[in-house]
Image (cartoon, rainbow, N blue to C red; front, side, top):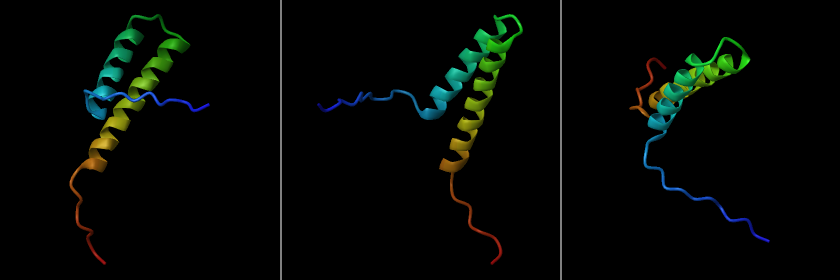
Length: 68
């Protein structure tokens, strides 16, 4: 039996999806009382922001190496 792949055409860039998830997670976290679930949502939002920034940095123009 062969498993079929779930292929989906992405309509947004990775950075846009990460930013949207982070914003949504922050909004949900702010509506929750202090606790573990709220902290997890805030942590995931922060991780998505960092991932988005790293992706931008890695996909940017390559800087020539300095020195030898």
